[in-house]
View 1 (tube, one colour):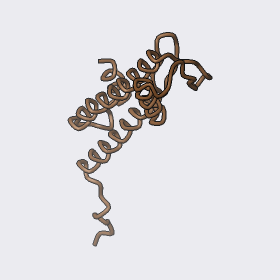
View 2 (cartoon, one colour):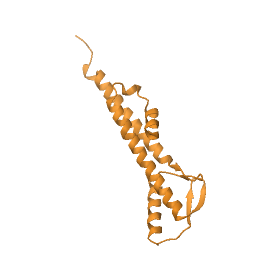
View 3 (tube, rainbow, N blue to C red):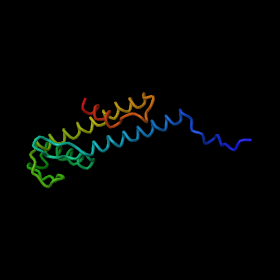
View 4 (cartoon, rainbow, N blue to C red):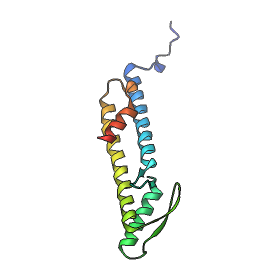
Length: 135
């Protein structure tokens, strides 16, 4: 009589699915980190991609366009305070939302590659994400 508990055996198919789930989780983390890093605008202004910044930019654009506030706007960046014109606020908002969308599009593209991969554990997620983001 055997003392082997076959209920604890991990099949090759189950291992591949575990690896696939881990790869997809790692991909989501890479996308999140990239999105939160934000963008650097012409002139060197660093604009984070976090939700608070996106909402603040959206609100500022709306308030400027409706005449509720006027330019220049005092804006805090990771390196300190700057004054921004309406055009700069609009450009920052546009650049950030385009960057966030590009990050999600890259994640979707790489997720499809991971789903199709026969060996998701050996898949270079970082390289694939970088290539998809650059495309």
